[in-house]
Length: 172
Image: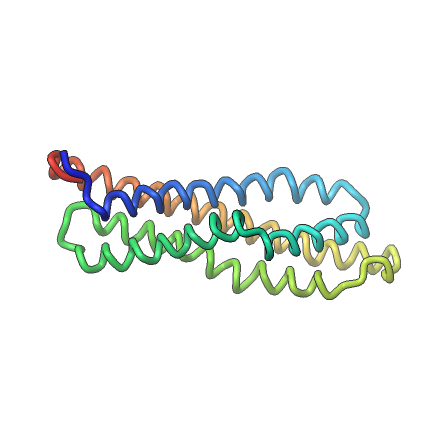
């Protein structure tokens, strides 16, 4: 059996997308919920620190952005090879993989940028509660969407690889 470069690249994209989806799922279900249990000023302060770390962490950026870039590359190759078995599945999965990055830039990053401009120590308790709620609810909802798109993307790309494998067992 010979494994094609496309299969290797798509396999890496599947793993990266699944990992990105897992990171976002954990963030939505544990980190954001934990922050929400603290005081509003503390939650804002902690999230601002997390944002700085996320923007400067090479391993995180490589994992998260790498998944989107790999999905894009795999999607372009799938378009070129659309007549091959399973390529439509890979293409649709790749679109889902890229969609998560688009959602990030369109919704989560602007919310992060706004929160990063807030001085939590200078807020009244009412203003801190209002700022945290205005951030927490939409950010977490969009993060759920990002997690789901990444996992769906990984599953569809994997399905496309398996469909290709079943059509030609000597080459993947």
